[in-house]
Length: 363
Image 1: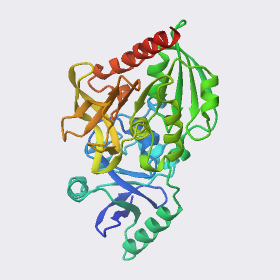
Image 2 (image 1 turned 90 degrees about the vertical axis):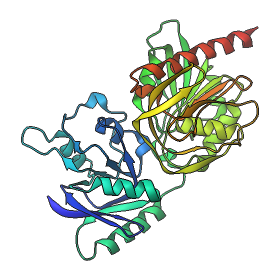
Image 3 (image 1 turned 60 degrees about the vertical axis):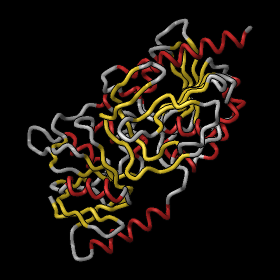
């Protein structure tokens, strides 16, 4: 291990020890989940972020490819209090090394998280500890931010249409618009449908999607600021009222913008698996998994769109529903179901609404 540090763009330095991985810069965010380091790091929504885990020990239960949410690790750094690194168990550390992700341990993560919570998330960089650390880190942050394109969903979305056979022989066909999706969303949709086609959010046209003749539309999660996803928003505008739409996380934000609403950035975001939700559609309260830094701005929704879900931690908008526009959006991840399975019913609700929409359309 080598003495290294995390330097925030505001100047604060958090020392620790790194194992391997080239210096990296990204937005520094924290996650309050006690487990799930593999699922979190492979979620495309974490693109260009340095991840701080609040649970003290990481890598303690090993690794398994079947828990990955995509084909690679997307985070730019992994920060924790202690990383499992023994002869018996060091699998997670080795995975991070293989993707050149710098791992910083022995960090006072409590102090770091309090800083992010009280003053808001900022960019940072993990670099070797020296007298030049601050200068090197700030320069790396500047270069990295300058090289970024605004719409991050373009960098994580699939680049070609992908087709999958579902588990229901006589089920619906669902068009899946990809902004940087988790695999578990696809798994849950496949359980309930006969066929799913994933369309790249930027490279697909309205004509292509409509030509496939789906029975319903799903908008996936993804990284970055929804206000920068202009092409995706225009695509969804053209799909409104054509089929029932279900948006998850970024897909929910894009749906809201297509309906005429606005989004804004939270001070430190919602990232973890213990966020309580009040759901007026299913008439219940349950725990949810969340990973986002932006939400819908109150008072900007059209009158014909209702707030269907509320985050009980801070009363932010966590879901919208419209009978007129035939759509549902949730800010959290129902496919992650830490409740453990309460929010899975939203996928059943989506399928039911899609069937009802198609019955009415055929009359």
